[in-house]
Every structure is written in C-alpha cells, then in structure tokens.
Length: 370
Length: 265
Image (tube, rainbow over all chains, first blue to last red):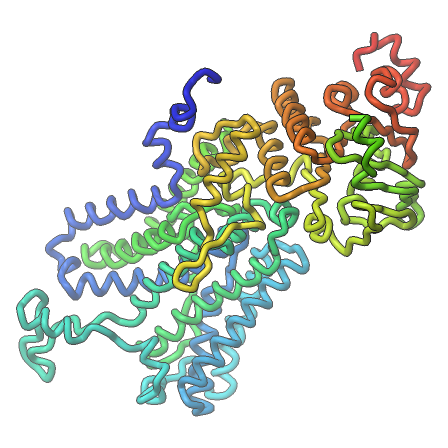
C-alpha cells in the first residue's frame, strides 16, 4: 500500500453501488420509483395522474412531510416524539378555543398556539434530558395528557368535541391565509384556459380550473424540507444534531451542547405538528378532538422508510420527505385503484419491516461491522 | 530530552494533589510535573487513582487539596471547557469518535469551521475536508476520502484521529487515557508512533497505561501510582520493566507470581 502513488490511495476500491447504498435516501428513492411505476401501470386511467388526482395525493403527502421533517431531525438527534399526533389535535383545539370561543383575533390565536405548543415541546425535551428517561416513555405520557386535554377542554366549555366556525373567524385575518390560503391562482387559471388542466363545465364555477391553486400546506412542506435539509447537512448545528444522536457522551466531551440540541429538536417537532394543525383547521374550518390520531407513528414510519436509524445519529430529511411521499401516494393510490383501503395498513407494516431491515444492513456497512 | 527539562520550567505541575470522594481518599498527595515535548507515562493498576488524577488535570474534578500550576500560573478550572480552551486536551479511550459520522465531521465536532453566505452561517465543508485530509496524512493515515465514516477505521486509527484533532485545536498538554489498552499489536504500534510524532511537535504528552511495555516504548519519564500515591518518577533508562511492574503491583504479590508466570505479564 505504501508504494502506491498518493492520488490512487484515495480513490481505491469501494464500488459505486456500495457507495450509493450508504446514502440514507437510497431506500426512499427506490421506493418512490417503485410506487410510481406500480400505480402508473395499474391505475393510470383512474384519474390519479390528472391535475385533481395529483393535487389529491400531493396534499396528503405534504401532511405527512410536515410532521416527518420534525420527527426526522429529532430521531437523528437520538430521540422520539410519540406526542406528535396528540399535539396536532391539541394545537387545532387551541386555535378554536382562542379564535372562536374567546373570539380573539385569529393571528393572535395562531401565535399564542405556536408559543404554547413549542413550550410543550421544550417541556418534553427538558424532562427527557433532565431525567435521562427514554423519550419513548416521556412522550408516551404526553400522548395521553395532550389527547385528554384536547377532549376535556371543548367538552367542558362547549359540550361538544368539535368546534367549528374557524373559517368565519379567520375571515380577513392577515396571518390565517399563510396556513389556509392558496397561491398561484393566475397560473392555474391560465393553465385551465389553454386546456392543460381541466375546467368546470357548468355550475357557478364554470370556466374555473378544477385545481385553482397550490394550498399553503404544500408550500409549508417544501419550505420545511428545504430548511431541515440545509440545517442538517450544511450548518454546524446540523453537525451537532448528528453528534447528539450518534453518541451523546462523545459529543459532550467535544463540547457539543447536547441537551440544548435535543430540547430544540423537541420544540421543532412540536412546531411542525402545530403547522400541520393550523393548516388543517383553516382548511376544514373546525377543530376536532380526534385530529392527528396515530400521526406520530406515521411520521416515524416515513422517517424510517427515508433511511434514518431508530437509534439516532443517521438519516436524511430528503429521505424522510420521500418516505412521506410514498405514504401519500400509496394511501390515495389504493383508493384510486379501487383497492380496499384497509390494505393500506398491511402495506404500512410490510414496508416498515423492509425499511428497518435494509437500514440495519446499511448501518453495518457504514460502521464496518461484519 | 533531559537538556530541555533543565532549561525550561515544566508546562504543568501538579503539587500534592489530594482528592476525596466523601470518606474515600482517591488521591492522597500526588505530585507530577510534565515538560513540553516529553512523553510522561502514568502507570498504575486498576483503582490506583489514574482516572481521578487525569480528571483533576483536565478540569473535571476540583482537587480537595494541592495546587496545579500551568505555564507558571496557578490554575482554577470551573469545568472541562476551561481546560480545553487553555490547551489541556484529553483523548478518552472510548467516547471520542462517533462511528456513523464522517471523519471530517468528527474531526471538527464542536469546533465546526463556518463561512458566511448571504448573511447566513454555514458549515464550511470544503475547509473541513481539506484540513482533515492534511492532518490525517501528517499522522500517516491515508483516508479514502474525508466523508469516510469513522466506523470503517480501526481502533488505532480512531485514536490517531482523536489525537490529531486535539493537536490541531492547539493542545499544549495532551492527556491520553489508555489509548492502547483495547488495541492489537499493529494498531498499538501505530498509536505509539503517533505519540512520538506529537511529542516531537513540542506537545507535552501524558500517557496513561497499565502496560509497562507500551510505556517503555515511548516514555521519557515514568510515574507510578499506587493506592492514590506516587511511588516516584523515574527517567528513561533508570528503571527496568521488572521494577516498573513491581511498583505498579505494590511490590510483593507479583514478585511471587513472577516465578510461575515466567515474567510474561
């Protein structure tokens, strides 16, 4: 080895395949191709790939993506948050209580809700780093605590579990459209006019395109993915996230503020959950006590499909976003293809198992274990 | 080495260090001095107080009694960060590297270089990669690339990365906590060669070990700890491996064993 020239030393061995294999996004990329190919073959004429169909699964995927970004960064930092789903329900209910019941201005309701939810995320994180308990247990407690309050509060003050009237309360508000609005209407009108996308044939909306704009939900998903990806791969804080999840003790020895990183990631996860909650209540016009049920697991599954290790220290935001896309496409695709929708859960379980096995194998390659 | 010791004062002096944990006396008056450019081996059996001693030196523990003089001034570290800033770096046997992260990410962990782009601060990967490759080459390790995961390196190479990292970030005193205890023969010799390179750069190396042969291979001076006390410091050439071994074990018992084991320990 010593007599080989310097340049050769660095480019020796490691096949391109192996190199590609240790990229965390690989599973997500392959999965995305597979899923699109499958549905293009078997459900192409179902309307899944016309403008309405695309918008349909894009919105569902974007919902998964928003919470997956938070869950992804938190998992790479070495922790879980099982309270994401309850946080979604809780945040939505807070908006309704502040904005409708207490009739505060909607922007104030939204901002206060964000503050409360991020503080709850910080509390989650603080308890985890202070007690050293597994985040699994701590956030499981919050799953029940928050869900309990989400049911208790509207029951007590309104005697029902769904509070409506949010759309009216948000009318004319400056902040609400950032979550519930749409953008790009002129472009879609133009696309409708030139016949690229369909237009309504009759009724009050005759002549308008069937898809009239991109919901802010999708914009939020894209912004959060880009933010998360850059934060993780291109900043020093990103290095601290990897280090905190890879080996907290080693990171501490090197001067990484591990506790701060973990608490901030819990807060970011709560922030993402709140973004989704606000988008949802603005879209539906109501807050329900059962919103966000099981979302925490779907977020974790999307992240794992995206190549992150459950043990932390390794993963990719792009991968998690692709995991969420696979989710959305399959969930809606099965509907378009006319397959019994309960099979979606079977699919989830199977793909989760495959992803974890693949990740474990990849981890072995990276760490050089045999 | 002895010439420089006479000319310049030691870079760090530990005088009569005592450390009590409740009713347990871990250190009962240990005095050691270390010169720049020397490798000072600290030997001792398990429980001799080696760990407590280096933790005191690196600012983790405050001594119950005694004085630490670093570069001529008395020291009072509030926490390990102060010690690192002052130039006292510790490389732990474990817990130094994160296997899943690349060499360059590990190298700059906690000290990431940054660059400004459009007012935002980003991790300067180009700089980090370049420096990592350079420093590794200096230590005689040819990486496949700066993005190679530390997990693919051998134990000895990991120690070397950790040592190179400490040196790069301006360590004046480098404390190595049993760097060779979990390594094979070839990896050990690599780490010992690294220690030699570091010493030649004028850095004071404190090499903690319980292996007499590893100590004798690179050490300039040897201090033996036993039951929280120093049993004296010897210079290279003044002491035989057998004498060191006896001191570490506290004398008698091992002398009896020696016969049956044939001097293999």
